[in-house]
Image (tube, rainbow, N blue to C red; front, top):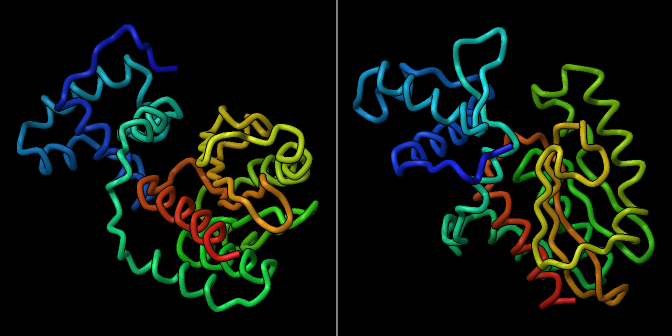
Length: 238
């Protein structure tokens, strides 16, 4: 866990953000040579900064690699630093959600359509509550991601999904946008996935939810913006 009593410099913050974004793109641990080229400093300088970030608990070094990967605490630090302006309003993904939702005449079809677009745009599993049921789409897309070559992780996600609908019904997360990263998930703490959900009002409930579930390796700026917009569009139209 990130030690809040320890300070992080602006350069360390930039390096952390870059590691997270590189790792989201490549699914491979990020090495000092890559960072050195991006920041125009020596690999030794980057290694020293990485050591500091590791001491802070924000990145870790897999046993089989010289590179670094973000920890859950690193992702949380990154997500907390997002200000909502990281994705342009006219992003094509935003437009796709708006078109799909507005083209449906029934509320349940609009919700399913929004979920299906989120699956297409993110490669994650999409989910939404429709009445007292949980609609899921994109399970096969989720399990094609490299994190899930490990059958143990697949089983952990399956167990989480088994418990997700009753948890949403009972816990009813109260924030307009809720982001649970890795061990923060109240169910499936060891599944190493992130759950990003938006609350919205629908004809079925004042606390309906739409979102995605995927590996902790996410483009959080884009995915959270898309999920937020999906919830907003559904509430506006249905």
